[in-house]
Length: 199
Length: 379
Image (tube, rainbow over all chains, first blue to last red):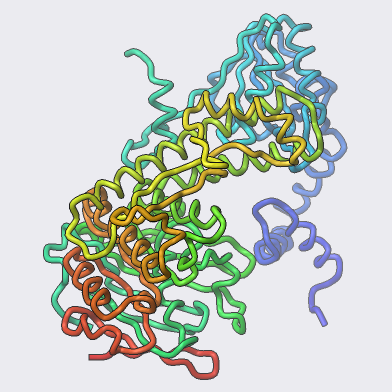
């Protein structure tokens, strides 16, 4: 018979479902929370309750927001005419961490996958095309993964936006900052060579 | 074990200098050291000889010589995962390679203590093998020959595996669209673009590998017969090899492919043909012994070409290779392996099969009792 109280067992089971956590790490997390009840567990529970109550999807871009529109879509400063298309919110946050992009976003929520029954409708690609036309977007930047699914989606979107008046670009692929050529695979080197630029 | 290195200066050597196995098939726990000479492994059927070769084959990217999933490699009774740890002398540099899998998890690789992708193994070691399952290579379906060609290609170009994976992923997606009778030209076009891109890389890698093997066969001092190799498409047609050619062929074949429910053009439909050069006879029509000799000839040519390309001959895994060879050809094989300076790993049912290697190789005897293999170093 398990020596763990059922409420704690339930919490461990729920924790173990989170990305990056397994049963063993979930047990360690829960033990830490119980040991730091006042400093960690109660504030965490309150924060989670607040997010569960208030977080929602921005109706315009798909970002996480606490209002109908996220702060980026609300900000007039971000209406630069550039729209960056990302796969999910984590990618949007990664772009924001870089502080190199000052336009707005569009979160697809996945990539095209016939095997997983995710088609253009499920990703809202027709809605993206409408948005590009309605907002007078001049450049759509496709910031999608350099995987087969990511690149298939990028090419599909480029095709769908043909004739929209917006130029379609994608992030460069090639040598990472601080990377050494000798350690790169041939596909990356080929991509880097294709994307070379004049100095 | 000790003894003189077989291939002279370490700078041009590729050799496993130590091998430790934990819960790998019939080997519960094993630790061996090697000096770089060929390794002759003998013992009765089912003793666990091929399991040793499989462990060495896992020092290259992929699923090893049995094409086994990670969960199949661990000892069935134990169910605790498995591990292969090897020290490799690669072109004068010593590296520790560790690979294994926990139950239900994919295979992981660590090189010199750091996690690494499987493809990184190709930078340290090249492994080429010949197993009895390949005896019918020239008479069976084209899939086996494509696999043989792709493995040979990957020994020259480790990145070839990535191109094959990318191509197959896009093709599976396209095949699903075809089966579901989806009629979205843009979706097909996007997938065909990925297939054409990866397919062109596959075609270029394969052509380069065939050219390297052909060059290594030309004028080589060998007793094994040379094979003229060629790559053909379905029904003997010339396969499209350029990115634009492939994209056009795929787009033009959509209606036909939808009727078939799968993709009927592309590098996944290519076939490798071989002709016994001296006789002008297709390999499929040669005798069993001649077919085996042709395969050995190609594997040796692959090894000679790699010796130039990589800087050292590959690890050669020759499982039950003596089975179809007469005493003269066996002796010739051993002489060629030693002259090449390759650390070859050979298996056979008795030590007498390796008489030609006495004094030039390390010998291991393998026995089995109660499902556990025991390996003994022999003088």
